[in-house]
Length: 306
Length: 261
Image (cartoon, rainbow over all chains, first blue to last red; front, side):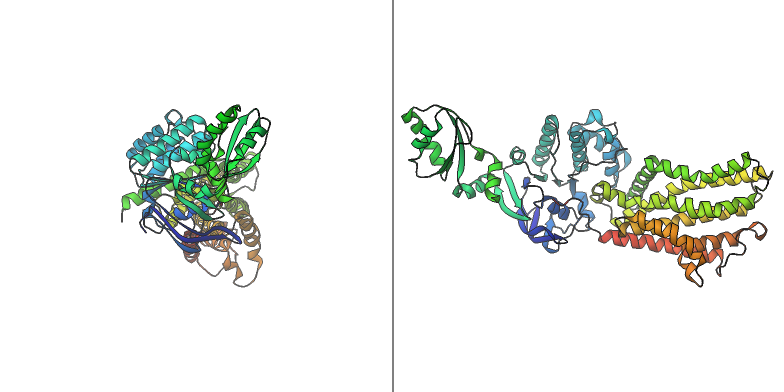
């Protein structure tokens, strides 16, 4: 076991409900995106990693150590919970500073580090306002600031972009990228796939408590090449275009979801994109637009979880 | 052992707890309730009640302060220490810092103790002072009465707090269980014969008052007890420590599911 996170057949039950189901995965260095819908087991995995839960079966390690009630390990991690509640009566500065002092940091150092961390996440101007007045995006940034202010080795971020405004997202993603560039490890979850794509190609797909795919996004794409790949074509003559495309052996089906639109499913997307221009040219049909839902991670996820 | 670091953490958790208990809306209710003994004595003085003296003060304070105010204030504050952090989802911020769960419980308990004593002690001291002034007596005339009530306030806060803290890590609805124990069990236990009253906090608090206040001005002179004030205080301190340790042990084993993702 050499990964930043190693999980071997980890199961966790909540009474009758299975939170993680023999979850096995190894997360390496850099940024890893944990992708899955709500209830997939992402938060359960994170709570196991930060030692708030312990597994019923299997073994899980973070930075090579068992996280359950492991106090020294907490110096090495920064955690950003999904929930947005903060200590509302504290200002952003006091919030980060207080948590830093729980690391045993002297007051003066905690003040300096808190100020720096709030600056990194773009929250300097609101640092002295009580957090109860913060927007959801500001709370996300305050949570991120407290997670990274003590310079941990790994950041564990549970839905860090949830509810964040566009400016906040930019700050958060930039902060995460910079942290990784400086040698830190990041494990972040989301149920919105395109968010992960912006910072990493390294993802783990989780569904029903199981890791259903892990690795580079391109490797995962290779997994789905056996699945039909959808292409949406905007044309004034969708039925004629469908007739022309029907000669492609790898085309599986046609749909006409709305007027002037043809949805094609193919088993060989590379061949399809190569042959399409020639067919359009030969038939002189009008093709105004082309888009593939499969170009985003969202499609990868949908294929893999059915 | 890094004593400086531990002291720093203890101070931070204690200060955070103090601020939480004394500056949120809960504080308004507990402060108002804690002021009831003072308001009552001021009312008696203002109404020029002829029988208002240190005896009447005690006769009113034992059922009102010891059996209502003290229990309510300790219940509301002690059950909030851990349970409200769990319910508010703020606990992960503390649990992902390098501080052990038992230490967190201990530091929070210290914060609680300081907070409730800040709320409870000034009104009882001022109420005593008003009583003595009304009778034209010096503040130091019946210091045994003041000492008895201060001792029972401190020991009662410590023991009830430890009990309610322990309940709060055991059950999801600690207020309901605490109300049953505080206002039902503690009220009826004195009427049960035999040694059963010894399984209550109020028995030891009344024992202390009986023992430390001069018999001539002691409404609990006939209170049925076979232990001394020293033993009673020892029992309360021991029980408090034991309950905080138990709470810390249960908390150490607790899992925090919050939201299953």
